[in-house]
Image 1 (cartoon, rainbow, N blue to C red):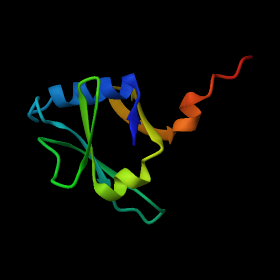
Image 2: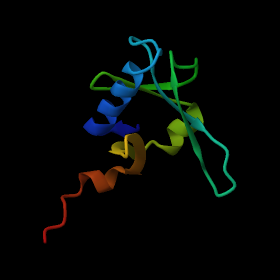
Image 3: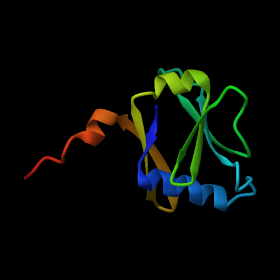
Image 4: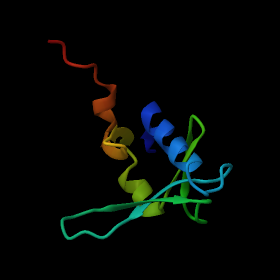
Length: 104
C-alpha cells in the first residue's frame, strides 16, 4: 500500500484546507493520466473518493487511489516539497525510504 511521508501528509492537509473541498472527506485523488512517455498520473483535490477507490489516511490527510493506480503504487512512498510557492509531489520506492542515509 502507498505510504505518505509526514511532509506529504502536511501538504495534502494544507491543500485541502486552502480550497472549497470538504474538510472531513476531502483529499487528494490519484488516477491514471495521459502520457505518450509511459505511465502518467493525474492528481486532483476531491470532496470524496469514488466507489472503487482505495483510501489511505495518514496524519489526517486523505489520499484516494484509483484501483489500477493503487496496484502500481503499492510499494511506493509519496513525498512532497514546496518549490517557489508550489507543492511538488514525488514518488519513490519504499526500500529507498527504509535505507539509512549514506555517511560522508
